[in-house]
Amino acid sequence: MEASKVTKEELIEKAKRPAQDAMKMHPFYKGKIEIVPKCVIRDIKDFAIWYTPGVAEPCMDIYRDPEKVFQHTNKANMVGIVTDGTRVLGLGDIGPMAALPVMEGKALLFKYLGGVDAFPICLDTKDPDEIIRTVKIISPTFGGINLEDIANPKCFYILDRLRAEASIPVWHDDQQGTAAVTLAGLINALKVVKKRIEDVKITMIGIGAANVCITKMIIKAGADPKKFLVVDSKGILSRKRDDIKSTHKEKLEFCHMTNADNRDGGIEEAMKGQDVVIALSKPGPDTIKKEWISQMADDGIVFVCANPIPEIWPWEAKEAGARVVATGRSDFPNQVNNSVGFPAIFRGTLDVMARTITDGMCIAAAYELAKCAEDKGLREDYLLPTMDEWEIFPREAVAVAKKAIEQGVARLKFTEKELFQMAETKIKRARDEVGILMDKGIIEAYVE
Image (cartoon, rainbow, N blue to C red; front, side, top):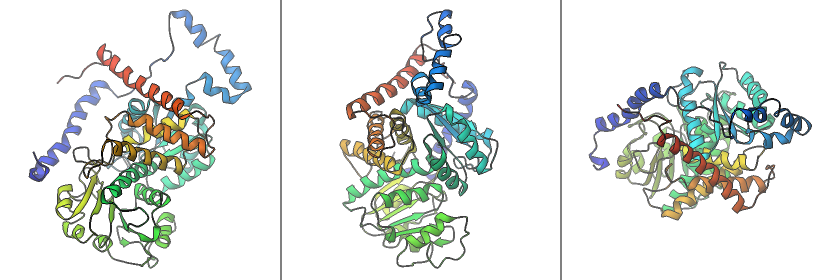
């Protein structure tokens, strides 16, 4: 059935199906992850190696040289997924326990797509300084930390502090992950319409954590900040705005670095004559209107990524004159999906034991992700690879690891060939492991 012939009711019903299935399958499996041994257990005597008395020797080796922890333990492949549950998906502040199913799902994606062992850590505090302290004191266990679903603006403060102070890489997927994948989609959209990133005029609709980081990353990738317009709930940010609190330092920064012409107005005014619109704002379908898209520059690019319903239906955006349209949904072309980014970015980070995840590493991932799609043949309806194109993840991981080595933040150095073999082996092992467990019936099939 063509998208234009699908009714609003049919689309809404389709959007409800995953939630309906989730309410059946979550209680059936009682969660999505568990711990499985990775060492041989030939018989009970092997526990003398893995536990006492044998384990004392690797313990003392680490005591003498803390870097040996990466040789003797799984630290180099473990990530903590930390949340306080204050901004969970589109659900808002539902608390740490209600956030746990999402964090388990994140851990599942880490493992299956990136070969990374990730664990949910849902904290019963909303205090940003307490979250920072907690991450720092649990860092000996992990090779990296993924901050998730933490409310704006404290998420910026937490990330900035931890990137500066933590002994392991810390990143926030809602910021850096979304930004990397959006940048990848924009890179390819600009290729489709034959425009250059330094030339285009870009409007950002919404000023949450994701759009703040997307804006900054696109600028670091070469866009001109003076050609940006950023719109919050009260209109276009500009030097004339005197209603912004000092706690929103990102908004204040954008007031001074964007909007060179000091334009004002709302979304409609912010879209006039623009080459690109990137929206992560209020779910639609009427947040953005067709006539506003009609007033954009020729060959307009529109990313409408609100969930579950984009700010405008993609076919309506196309009818209004947009050349390229992307959304956050998997049932429409050009899904902007973090899951094609963060597993590989962490894979590359962990493989070289990087001390941090730099913006340069994220941008390298974006360009490689874009190249993966380009190698298959760009089209208006194919800007980004999808999760089932598993070969993209080793390629991204290599790009990230190479950039970490280049920037001097990697503890280990390998050749490109070695990096690819490492990433491919670990990712393939994770996927094969799930397949074997399903084939053997250890993971039981769900049957209605």
